[in-house]
Image (cartoon, rainbow, N blue to C red; front, side):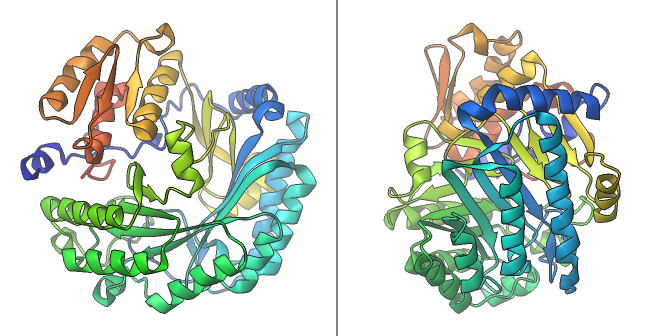
Length: 453
């Protein structure tokens, strides 16, 4: 395994989309094209399956230095009201040109720190959404909570609207690691937040754990997972730390690469953690994700319903995903669009009745085929080109590149298809790389992506 880690530890995307954001074609994209694509896809699918809604709530009271997300650091909670007003204005603009009320199949509040907002303001946000949209009978509603500031009132308020899933960022329980990433939270805070979620009726509680953090050792990871198992969350995201200090605003500057575990040590952290989770009854259901057999995401993976998008892994797929708020990304299936990242610019555009989109991509026929192959691999660890709909001209060249991964035991070829082996699952990003034709045709000269291992 050590030699494979050295061989395949290369920069690569996490494939929450294809094409990945750095390879979006800005020349063919425009706001007019985006609106037309969104409306057509919305009308095609809304009554059949509804849409997914992601709302980015960017405010945090302190900077976590492991984080690569768009956020705004402030202790001034007067920012809550104007931001909610702006998000609801953005939704109203979409509602004004699509011609019918959206049917919400999934709603997710991400950040930033959604629980930065008071429970009263979160209630105002959700009430405002329901003025413009209908909730599907089986709508999946979830949010990301910070264990230090998620209260029982937060949980009960959101539960009253139908929220049943919450995910808490744990990262690591070691004090040295917590200080390095500026995320100080005792086990007792996570325990309280987890217990209160169950008390409030949440049916799925998730914990996010990260391996490969600065100053993190194998013993730290084992300790964190052992403490996590005590609380028995329904889902666990056991992520690889993405070291991308070159991305503006991410705060990864309180340490350097010398403080990070080596690639080999990082892979050992994952393998030991995976073993501990398996012994506790958790099942690996996707890249870096584990769930109990009682959780919806486990059933979705078993039934091949699991999907991956900008919200991560989800238990169902909708053709349209609408992202609201600064930096949020929307997906019409045929195109992508990302909002501006500056809050003042976001406000200014909405005040002028303009959707706050600043870049995007219109998918080509080839993009759609490649996207499906990468989704198949990331969600189901297999793909097929048996049907003409998934065959593309450069497939023979891709298969040649995959031969080396086959010889290393990371995948096996089947009749007009391939399957990632158990040995190969930690390398699934590497299996996707040969399919990524936009990256293969124009390999970056500077750092764009985190390391795959």
